[in-house]
Length: 269
Image (cartoon, rainbow, N blue to C red; front, side, top):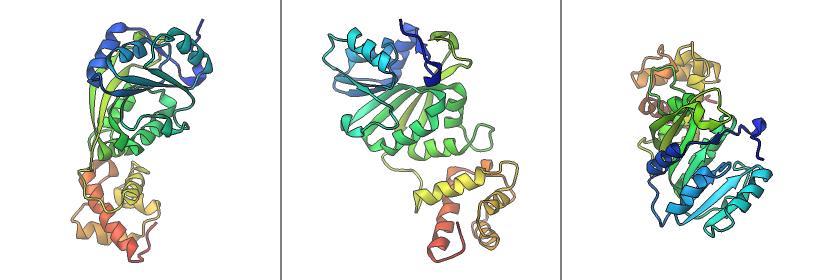
């Protein structure tokens, strides 16, 4: 008997109708390879095997790996990889693939970061995440859900919520509902940004103190007062606005100007 492990955030999907909707959302065709993260007891794995060329199932739980190997012994197009998705050798995975995953809350941010880092190999990601996380992914400026995660996802990809899932569709039921989100990496960012790392430095600094103006928040994060005043004046942007009201385009404008100043030796973090 497989008992879900609370330490791994395991909640096994038990609704076959949800499985069908996930398959439809992912838009899988027979010649595609699929990377399934956290297959659990394999309710989704079975359907993925029936509609794709090959499934690479990454599972951290050794007990589940043994169960899956026995359950799917007759499926030659399944490769089970035992390990932590955050630490496995990505050379074990195909050159190009789609991702299907039920992401535990505790690894959602680092896993999303890893997947987008590998975005050139990924045609799309169909992810089950906590509803709260999904809302942050798609949030726009001047909303309570808008966050560095929103900017990060939207900088590298398009994210579309597909449908919500009640907690009763899982065993054991989690305390919150989930949402399936389809993420499609962009071949190129829509923004003309001089330096990605510096762009996210500005974004992180802008959100660091949400109750403060963006000027004061960036100042507290090490940006020099005179440089801040000069840049906001040049760009005709109101430095009294809070960081969460700034669009990706505005963040790009700010980061580009700050990066130019830093490259010339100005006192910037």
